[in-house]
Each structure stands twice: as C-alpha cells, then as structure tokens.
Length: 407
Image 1: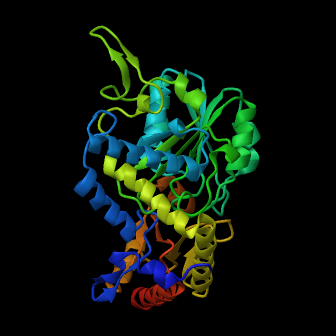
Image 2: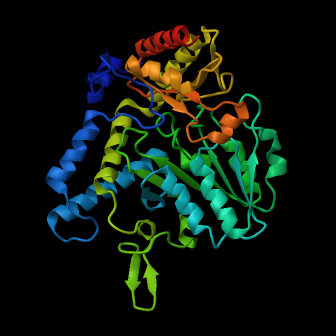
Image 3: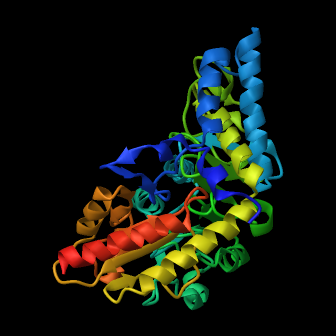
C-alpha cells in the first residue's frame, strides 16, 4: 500500500483511549466513522475564527464563512463528479435526503403509479416510500432476495413496468455489505422513463462514486460515515429534475421574493436549503473529503477490501460462525452469528465490548433482511481506513472467547 497504517492511525485521537481496560478497537464504522484530527481541528477553527451566518451578511467573517461553505460544496461536486455545484444540496444526512425526495414527489406520484425498492434496504429507504404510497395510492413493489441475500435481479423485467416512476436502491447494503448491481437497475429503469435514487451511505466512504457515470437521478449519503461530523449529508439531483420539483421546506434563504399573498422561490441549490444550515458541519464535510483525497479513494478501497477478505477468511476458520452473504460481492462489512443454541448477537457483542472491541449487533435498521434469514439480527464488523489486520486478529480471539463462554 502507498500509506503507512500507523501514520493513518495516529491521525485518530480516539484510538488512543482504552475501553474496559483494553485499547479501543472500533469496528462500527457502518454506523458512524471516527474522525481524524484534521476534521476535529476544522470544527474548532470555524467556531473560533469564522462563526457567522452565510449568504446574508456583508461583513467580512460572513463573507468568509460563505466562501468556505461553498468551497465545501464544490469539493463534494468534484468528489462525486456532479456536473454542477448547484446539483449538490446540503442535508442532515441520508435519511433527510430520501425524505426530501419522497416529500416533493407527493404531487408527482399518482394512484396506480409504482415505486420499486429492494428487499435489502435500510428502513430509511423503505418507510418514506411506504408513507408516500399511502398518501398517493401508488403501489410499492420490491426486488426479492436470493437465499444468499443477493437480489433476484433476473426479475427486473417483470418488476419494472411502464407504471414504474421511481426506483430506490442502496449501492451497498448496510446490514450485510453486499454490493448491488445498480448499473443494470438504472439502465432498466430509464428504459421506461423512471427516476432512480441511489442510497450511497455505505458506498461513499469505501469506493469511487461517479454520478455522471452511473447516470442516477438522485444520490444521497451521510457525512458522518465518511469521517465528517454527524448531522451532515448530501442530496445530489440532476438539475433538470430538481428545477421541476417543488420546494421541501419554506422559510428564509429558499425564497426569491415574499409577498403577503404569495412567494417566489430561489434557484438551486438554495430552493432546497431553507433556514440556517449546519455551517460548521458542511464546511468540515469538505475537510473530510480532503482527508480521503489525501490518501486516495482507490487506495482506501483496495486496503479495506484486503481487511474484509482477511476478516472473512479468519472467521471462516471457526465452524461455529455463520457469515451472511459470504459468497456475494461485498464491501466494508462482514455480518455473522454464532450457530449455537440460544445465543443472541448481543451476547457476542457484550463479550467483545469487554475486550474493548466495538461491533454493532441487532437488525441494523434492516428487519426485512433479518426475516429473510430467519434471525433476530447479526454481529456486524465494519471497517475503515484506520483499521488493521492486527485488530481483526483481536476480533477473532474475542469471537473464540465468545464461543467458549456461550457454548
């Protein structure tokens, strides 16, 4: 690799702490990643030197804060290869981005229209579409799963019809790390004129995302999973589509003129950014992209794939371990259980926590997937660029301890 893992780890102050008397090993990056020092310092820098509202003041620090936030928007544009910076909208995260689109489609989606999702979605890419269908009379359909958790992609031709208006799918599953064939889905959807929303929450930290190449209509992701603060995120939308859709929230910043009996609205991106934004968070999202770019997303992708392959191989050595989606292309995470009577994923998680190892247990906000496998949840270890094979070895020792204690 072109970087030194110890140099990378040294940039994350939280890795210096101990948990339950052991060095912290953090394998819960699919929930939220840890933050490098450059990001932590950038938060302080904004509040100490530039704290001011944006787009409104003529005074110096307001102008400086505005430039910093718009520079961050441009960094995002370049990072995902959007055509225009005004196609990049700041949000609170993936969930808000999906809900924004679901909300503004209320007058677009009609009774008998169809929305297609998949059986491997996070709840945030299921519930908003259920709510939209309840309000409009549209029909919600889904691509079912094969036994191994992959999509039954061969059913696309029968599921996508002239009535399909929107397809919403994650690029990488948060629960299993499975990589979905979004290129084929986008191509099929566009053949009938349907729009496609891609949930990139789990792909954006791990692999190159190019919205023009994939030709998606919308793409959403969260900053806090890619080394940025919580409460930050992005909704990308094609300019021509966003221009024809109505605003989401009403208030300051999103208007052109306000009269007592009517208002006219600002152009993109401000049409969808009502009120005072998370200025510090948005600026620092750009700093997190600087951090990723300093290493290189392709380098990160290669390194994390090595970690995933190593973790999968080591877990496969243990006959008591069941890995879900094992033989399907995956990225970023491995999801498993112990095949022992009466053992719940949380039992394993608590034992690992006593060794200072942070994993996520439960249904991962993806209950339909868990029902597909007939399980209450899994143990999920999810990786970031600061993790190491030595930490995975410690995870394996923790799993072995769990087996001895729970068998």
